[in-house]
Length: 477
Image (cartoon, rainbow, N blue to C red; front, side, top):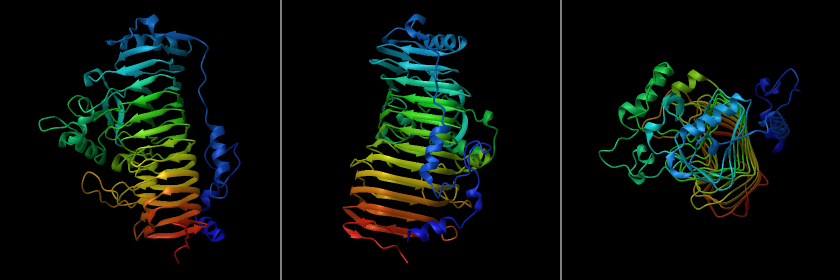
């Protein structure tokens, strides 16, 4: 069965056999399907981790006050400006509580939080000016993310301190329009036809991004940490809590490392990390305890995703812990530009509030392709719905049907142990005209699960040395 599976994988386009990823002039041709974990190692070697001059700029020296009351936006701004002007270094946040508006990073700056430091971000939306950003896969001019960098190089957020977005049912979260997050009649929310719906339509109509002006009164929440069109970016060691929206959002960026970060935020759409249109991203040694997906790999939505037409590719997730969340590692639903080469290994997932371990989702309005997903050495304690969930009919915000049928191919799970598998081992539904292709479970053990699998329009799904509820599973004919 193994030979049959890999034989079928190698039958399609020889384009996959060509030079992959980085600098084709110097990198030997490697087929990701033949030796995916060697390719993963090559990606790791290619990722540039920022380094900084041995100079420090303490925000106290620029007038910052640690009383949690005074807004220190100007002190952060001056410290960062001085640091980058002098060739870079470390902007230090000492122990204490520092209130501020958005922080905009610059080249060669490492924003470093010492142990005991907590940055409290303002809950006044008027403190967040318009910048080029993105909301749910559509680009626009909107409130600045809380920490933002645009078109910068060699940047970082590091340390043992806390980034506190101060979002709750009174601030930011109710903008989603859900009563469970504090919304009530008379309050504004993102679902007003002039807000989110208008934004999506502007993407379909190819309205120039600079004309998509939102911000105050539009109720579209900003991301917490967003690296937009950046190169060589790092976020390491910090704890992030109470986010308005997506927590860590590398957007159109290359060489991004997320290392040893703890995310605890249970608000609406509080995904832990959302690489979007990004390449060479490593997420490692992190803990995610979230109100939405722990990690969700994105690539734009609908018409705007087709306009941008960039893949998210070469994404590595390793040595992470996933607790609460809609999914452990997720691809989609905003995946119109496509997702390619995802590697997940040595992770633990366990919570009665974790819905799925590995999830891929799209629909025929989104379209897009997910190809080459490699998962190994995963321990799952408990999930609610499925260990592997592939849903090409994902439906949110009403009718999501169109003429762009999504594709999924080459998904491999190896050495996975699940103690309590929920309803399904594998739950997968594709389109008759474009089925899900090539799914392999090898050395997988799933206990306490309702059904081994439920599949529709899936071609070449193979079970090799896979046991579900103590019974060896044979591959479907």
